[in-house]
Figure (cartoon, rainbow, N blue to C red):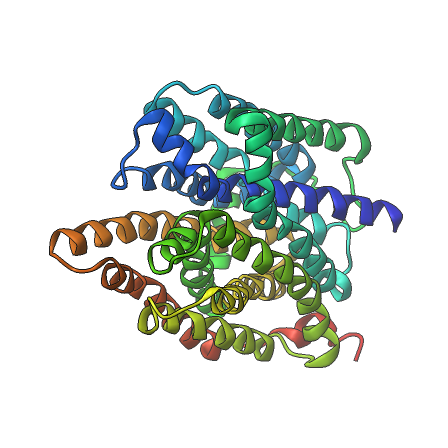
Amino acid sequence: MQKSYFVLLLCGIGYLLSLLSRSCPTVLVDYMVQDFAFTPQNIGFVSAATMFSYGFMQLPAGILADAFGPRKILIIFTCIAGIATLGFAFSENQIQVVIARFFIGVGVSLSVISITMLSLWFTPQTFARANSILCGISELGPVLAATPLLFVVYLLSWRGAMVLMAFILLGLTLCWFLFIPEVSPYQVVKKEKATFKSVFQGLMIVAKNKQFWPLCLWQMVATGSIYMMINLWFVEYMQKTSSYSFMQLSSVISIGGACLIFIQFSVGFLSDIVFKSRKKVLILITSIYFIPCLLFVVAAGHLNYIMFVILGIMFMCGVSGSNICNTMVKEICPKELTGTALGLFNMFYPLWTALTQVLFGNILVYATNAGYSVITSYRLACGLVLFSAILALICSFIAKDTYALSHASNE
């Protein structure tokens, strides 16, 4: 059991670094504009390159984890992330930056693999709580990607900070290789090799499950819109619609991320012990997340720092719904297809993030050129976030509860 929690710790650190890598453009955007002459119209492609590759790699990563075991795939992907981060640190022009960020997205596509790893080291009855701990640890990523990363950048420069991150990723690769065994306590060793036919059949089993798609749509629009804002536009939105400094506003993400850690830790326990329901917790989380999405549109220009902090916490709370959805997807699909199901499930939200990041910037440019004020421009752009929240709320009510699927034997 001690080894299981060591695996959980390593998975949490890897997931943390994945979120940190995806979120860091929020702090680095001004440095990249200065060093590489990015404009507001093309800076979105830096983060979008990471999210597109991250999104497209979710399904292959899940399939590979099912076919060859998550440990091997974690080693390969973490190593790719470390090398790509080094490439990003030593980039000399816009093209090199975008290419490096693309391969960072490939390497940090380890969230699905990490969750698949947990499914092999924890029982069905304890998986939801282990997944909550994993997601809680991972939420340190956005926290570190705000004010703490800014201080590291001041000390080491942004390139030095990225070199440090690269060496941490490579160190994690070494830990997976040296300290974690190939076969887990709850893993059934496959006697037959994976073939294209077996992979396709497994994918079809997941795709034909009607309970899967409301969860997948929730993940796409809710998690995708949250990371769209956190990874690039949230601090910009607050800065342009208020008079607070960049340093002060970056703390909003740190505070929200710190609170989200405790929320993530509690979600699994709430669904297992308090509500004894996945769906009720998902509806509650989505309703809380919906409120700031609405206020970002209707109250733009009238929010003070305290309001930003409160709404930031509520907005980032929505990420914990992904925790519940991950568990629900695992519970409705065969265990041997956990990686494939989670890969397909997590494939679409990074693409939504990347698409809306670019659309958000284009709406701002269009509205500005049309003569709208800055506040009105950001209000229009935040309509994307509100639209996503409405869809997510509908999906939370449509989704079927899966709590009994993993707890029926106990009861």
